Image (cartoon, rainbow, N blue to C red; front, top):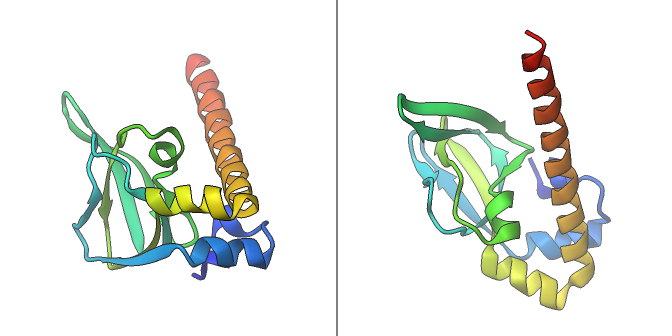
Amino acid sequence: MPLARQDLLHDPAPEIVDEIESRTTTRVLTPGTIAFDEGAESDGLWFVSAGQVMADIRTRRGRRRLSSTSAGSSFGELALVDGGRRSARVVALEPTICHVLSTEAYDDLQKNAPAAAGALTLAIARLLSGRLRYATADLAAFDEL
């Protein structure tokens, strides 16, 4: 799945996507490989171009699966934007290829290609807004049970 077809990058103009893509590196994960662990420092935004990963968290009863991310989607945006530590562990479920925009590359994007950084940041804000709306609706439905 090329970067231009990723959920976060399907709206921006091709030259914006090119600016972002030129700053990514490719990571190949075998099944069971941990992309990053809960509590780790942010290393960047990960775009899944092939394969699938799962995010989970540690609870008192063991690990709890939060979500799966397949080709065309991304993960790691929270820590990229707020600079905080990772809130979940991400593990490859199958052979997976990711393009990673490192935190340093994101900083470079902000400095040297502000239009591309702005487009990416807006796309991340929309993604997070959608997730928050979904979680709010989910909690409201749970309360009705």
